[in-house]
Image 1 (cartoon, rainbow, N blue to C red):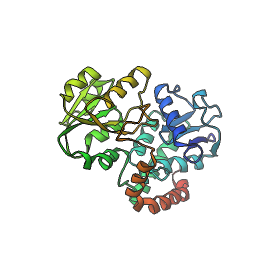
Image 2 (tube, one colour):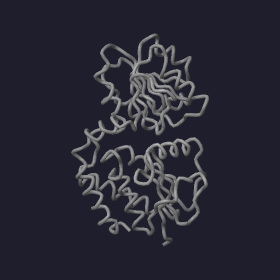
Image 3 (spheres, rainbow, N blue to C red):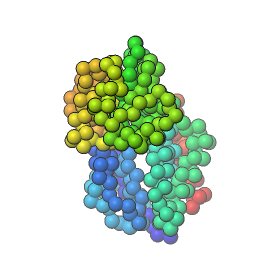
Length: 299
C-alpha cells in the first residue's frame, strides 16, 4: 500500500477570504485529473490527498499543513464528510461534495479505498450522532429573507450548481415565483424539472421577461464570476426593482455593498448559522473523536 499524504488549507491555516478566492479560482480553472491524488475544494478548504509528493501549481495555497499515512488521511476525509470539520456542524452539502470528488476515482486509483472507507465511516458517524445541520448554507436565504418578504415578490437565484438548486428546492416563504439565471440554462432546466414554480433563464434579456416588472430579492450562488458574466450578475442584483441580496459565493460577487446586502462570511451571517446549529456543536466534537478512534476498522 502506497503511503498517503494529505496537504491542506482550511480555516485553521488561512482566512475564509483566502480560501474563498482559491475555491473560485479552482472552479474557474481546475487542474487536470491526477492518477495519484484526490482534490477536494470548497469555500472553506482545499485538500490534496496523494500517493505522491507533487502538488499542482494551481494549489499554491497549500504547503503549510499536512498529515501523513493511510489512517490519518482516512480519518481527516471522514471527519470532513461527516461535517465535523465544517463551520456548520453536520453540514449536509459537504457529504455530497466528497462523494462527487471520490466518484472520479477508478478502483485501482491509490486514493480509491481511502475515499470509499471515509464515506462509509462518515455515514455511520452521521447516523450514530445525529449529524444533520439544523441550518445549512442553503437555508441562509430563509433565515435572512423570509420575514422581509412582505408582499408578493420574485426570488432571483443566480447560479445553477448544487447550492443554487438546494435554495430553489426550498425557497423562503413569501415569494410567488423563483427565477434562476445561469450560463447553462438548458442543463439547469433538466436538473430542476419537477420543482414547478421555477423559471430558468440564460441572461439579462430573459431575466427581464421572467421578472415581468415585479420587485425581487436575489441569492447569488455561483462559482462562475468571469469578468463578462460578473457584469451581468452585478446588473441583475442591482437592478431598479432589486431588493435585498444574499451572496453565498466564496468571495463577494459584488464590488460594492448595496443596502440590504449580506455575504456568506459576514460576522452577523456566521453568527446566524452558529446560533441555529449550536445544539450540534458537542455532538460534532464527539463524532470527530469517534471517527479518529474507529478509522482503522475500515482500513
